[in-house]
Amino acid sequence: MPVPRKFDRRPPERDLTRTNERIRVPEVRVIDDEGNQVGVMKTPDALRFAQERDLDLVEVAPEARPPVCRVLDYSKYKYEQAQKLKQARKHQQQITIREIKFRPKIAQHDYDTKKAHVERFLRHKDKVKVTIMFRGREVTHPERGVAILDRLSEELSELGVVEQRPMQEGRNMTMMLAPSKAILAGRAASPDGSSPSDEEGSSAAEQPDQPETAAEQPDQSETAGEQPDQSETAAEQPDQPETAAEQPDQSETAGEQPDQSETAAEQPAGAAAEQS
Image 1 (spheres, rainbow, N blue to C red):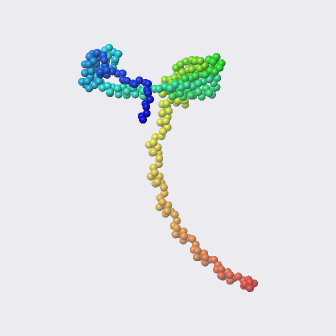
Image 2: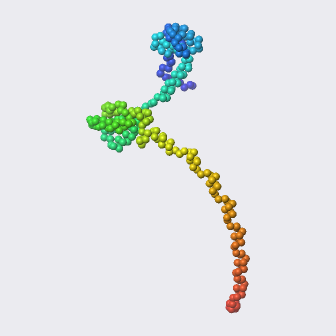
Image 3: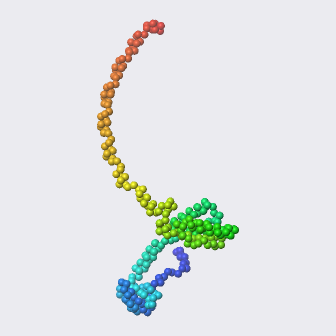
């Protein structure tokens, strides 16, 4: 079973541009496909003039007397108009309105924090609506709210301009700040005091030149050439067979040791007699 479509109460979008047989006026002023004026013609003659060139008769100025019609390809004309509208929307700058709220008895630290938020909003090219909220009998001293708003606008005069002066609405007092021309043009200085162009120049200067860095590296062939030749090092080492020849002969060392049998014979015979 197909799912029923949701009923749309909006009327269908219709193309209100009158073309060809939809043009009901008796005569029109005709402009041909090259932009030249043909003159005032009867509507059937103008339609026949467009059909001979395989084009459409399009009413471009219905309020004129007589209406102005142009001979052109209507489908191509609609496509070009849609592309122009798309490009206009792409380059259109959308400004967002941010709101931040203060109190008449706000402390200095809270004021600095909220002021930093307002500065950040303005640097992002957004409008800021600053609101002072009064409670109880604070509403009887609106001058405190005006003093806070004036102080804020003076401290942020380089980043924003007052679009709407402080105005009290009930228990709230509002002021509108808009980005300055320097912010919109991108010429405002950053919080550290440097301009965007200076930052780009310093970033480019800090990057080392890669070809020079490669040239400064030592040549691997030269480094390899400085290493001593392994054959020469081996030649400098003493000959192992000669070293072995210098060691005393174990057989000769063994010959120098006294014979155990002779030592046993030299022991006194009295010791043998006592053992018996």
